[in-house]
Length: 136
Image 1 (cartoon, one colour):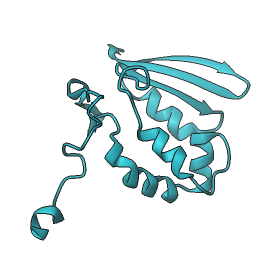
Image 2 (cartoon, rainbow, N blue to C red; image 1 turned 120 degrees about the vertical axis):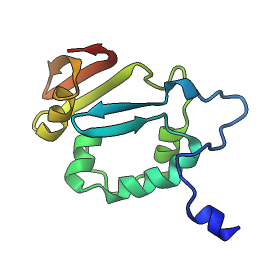
Image 3 (cartoon, one colour; image 1 turned 45 degrees about the vertical axis):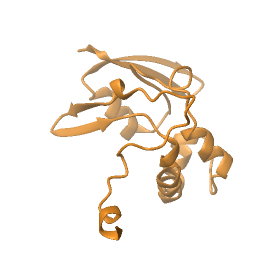
Image 4 (tube, rainbow, N blue to C red; image 1 turned 90 degrees about the vertical axis):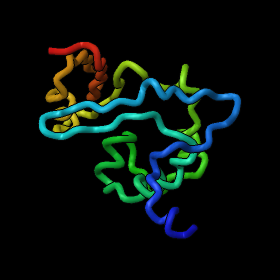
């Protein structure tokens, strides 16, 4: 039994509360340059992986993601990120993002996505929207 769990893919089917329907139909693979990425919604069982990821962020990366210095990530904060209803609380068609001025690496990712980028600028912050079905 230990051998079977040793190689279990953490992205395989996970337990979703019975009153919530996980949208399998939005899972997809998208190619960016020469890299193929798999997209899917977060699931409740992703909480430990998300926590590990957040604590591995550099101070600068955490600031660029959350617009404040974050040295700790409370359990409630992480739980809220993986507690989705898959309707109101999730983008299905694309991405919405806020990017602080100076985060050139993130802006480059969006600009090179192959999708039309909708931008607004206000008070040192870019608001970005892009949709997978709008191609350049």
